[in-house]
Image (cartoon, rainbow, N blue to C red):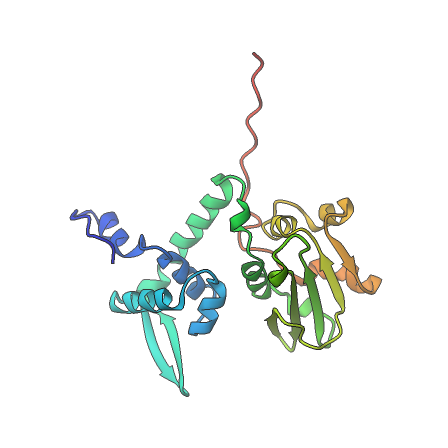
Amino acid sequence: MSAPYRQFCPVAKAMELLDERWTLLVVRELLSGGRHFNDLRRGLPRMSPSLLSRRLQQLTRAGVLERREEGGQVEYVLTPAGAELRPIVEAIGVWGTRWIGELGDADLDPKLLLWDMHRHVDHDALPPRRTVVGFRFPDADPRARDWWLVLHGGEADVCDDDPGHPVDVLVTAPLRRMVAVWMGDVSWSAALRSGDVRLEGPPELRRALPAWFTLSSFAAVPRPRPVAAQAP
C-alpha cells in the first residue's frame, strides 16, 4: 500500500488503498465481470502479471474482494465493500469522459478496445449463427494490426490470431477513429459517411453491424460545449 497520509479523514484513509497505481482499474475490471486472473490481464494489457497479483492480494487483505477456488480454478469476487465502489468508479469515468482532453497516441490500445467491445455485444441483434467480425487498424503496430471477434451462442471471443473461420464483415479504420466511435465522440453513421471507417461484406451485414454493439458505458455522457472564442 502507499505511504499513509496519517489523517483521520475517511477520504485519506480510503486513498491509502485506492490511489495505488492500477488499483481502481483492477476494481473496474472486476465490476465489469472479470473473475479470473487471465480475464483481468486482458482488460489490463499493460499491467505486469506480478503487479496484478500484488494488487489482488492487497485488495483481498483489505476486504474489497474474496479469492475463491472452485473446480480447480481461482476466482476473484467483489465483497459488499468492493461492490460499493461501483458508483465511485462510474463517477470517475463520467468525469474523465467529460473533462479530460484528447487522448494521446500512447493511450490508444487495440487490445483494450476489442476487449471492451466484446463485453458490449447485443447478441439478440446478431444473425442466428456464428458471426466473425474482423478489425484492421492500418496505422497500428504491425503486430497488433489485425483482430477478430467470434460471436456465437451468446459468447464473444477476442482473437489476435486468425481463428480460421471466414470473416463475415471486415472493419477497417484508423485506431483513433475507431476509439472515437466506440467512446461516442463520433457516430457510426458519420464515420462511415466520411470513409474513415470502412466495412466489407454482404450489404445486409454491413448495414446491421453498428447495432451489434452497444458502445462504451461512457458513450452517452454529455460533453461540455466548446467555449466560444472572444473577439479581441
